[in-house]
Image (tube, rainbow, N blue to C red; front, side, top):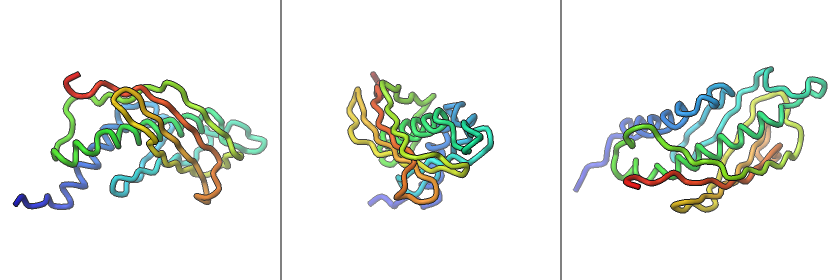
Length: 163
């Protein structure tokens, strides 16, 4: 019987996978989006900064920054869930640059004003096949039950290994 890996090795591998996904998209660093990982669950965090304000009179987060934040959360969650089983079963990270899903369409519902504070988002993969995936994302600020935006996206999946 094979001994389970030490927990620090497993955590290190998971963090390396997440880091390789996030570091592969320069726009994530530009916006300052971070990810909080708990097991296989990811929460995207958009730390507030003045450059994210679209309407200084209110003040409110820019709709484009909100949409980009939601799309980033969806793509990273989809990629994370796509790679999770392989990384867990094989114990190794995929070699070479990771190919991310391509957006087919992305519909955002702005439910209320995004306030000048940190924002959080969680994505849920509704369907993921070999060629196509559907993802739903919800974003909140102070209260998880008071969403300020949500989105649904459809994505073209990258070819699998050996394709």
